[in-house]
View: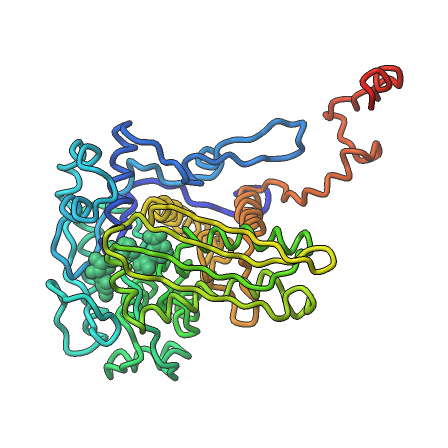
Length: 463
Ligand SMILES: NC(=O)c1ccc[n+]([C@@H]2O[C@H](COP(=O)([O-])OP(=O)(O)OC[C@H]3O[C@@H](n4cnc5c(N)ncnc54)[C@H](O)[C@@H]3O)[C@@H](O)[C@H]2O)c1
């Protein structure tokens, strides 16, 4: 038990990582972990593997790596599995997706070839542009949920896992019609038995995981676990849950630039964002139903960051447009353009242009790793229900229904680190720093204040 009363179970034994959807992001994530384990790659971008966290006062010089500060599972403890309606093993999938090159994949061929997708839940009403080769068969959606639960138990047993985490890395589904069966758990379970059309596949996986008390996250904008029925179930079964939609390319930029505009009270006239993308995700998003889900997820961030209700002259009437175009020659190498029309002093117009030549899965794989490890930490720390501190990783952070989500990347980052401090019984940092200059509050361990520079010296330096 640490000094804030939080008891975190140790990360012992194997951690099963189960991923519905084993395409570009999943295969790039697993390949990266295997390369790091062999000392053949660096987990660049991963907060859990590379980032340090400051503890205490600045003069204490305590900044351990996050992975040395909180008890996370190590990469050697992870075992991978998942579902897809493509039958390719992870070596074939990674080769076809072409995110990492053949020379990178060669030394891990054996490990990747051993990971094969289990048959998946397929519902053509929710995903167009894909033909299922490996679908599950079941009379009702409840049958399918039970098959997923049986798969999880069998995977756990076969691999001797101590715990299992599920993270949706499947395609973007169209949004279901709002339905009573999303409202509470009895209604959802009845809906599963009645094959209610408003229950998409990702919600069935989420139900299965949460029913078993597992941690569940959602990397797509699908509704999935973000309905009152599943939040209620998560609280009952002790599942930590989070989502939605990994924050990677353009939205990562947007939630970095928009807080700067607001902090400096620069006005926004318009923000036009467009992407070209040629991977399978791009092909699925070419369907208007799936695109609508993604568009909603990408559009919501500006209003919540800029708060037009507080600043009507600055942000009351900006024009926001988001486009994604499927352009096969680019594959996973996505290109995002942003044209931002802003106004400064005396309303004078200015522009910012961003051309982000990124790689879709190269920005998502490390988020999968961080979420898997933090969700497992949350479960061992007995945190249940919505994990808002993980908003940092998402475009549409899941939060309590009556709250506004937090989109500002820098506030999300503080929230993440302060939650880790709280979990480990360390002081939360408010960064006001006033006490450094208050002799009545400065701890005796603090170094003596530096002597003021001599006037003569300042004069000589021309200051
Ligand atoms: N930068 C990024 O790559 C990024 C950022 C944010 C969100 N996402 C989301 O992550 C998801 C994965 O992206 P990706 O590039 O790996 O896509 P992908 O198309 O390469 O892989 C998705 C896989 O999910 C499978 N799938 C679809 N429905 C399924 C189901 N019901 N059960 C099991 N498998 C199913 C598909 O067959 C496919 O193999 C997408 O929803 C995407 O929008 C990706």
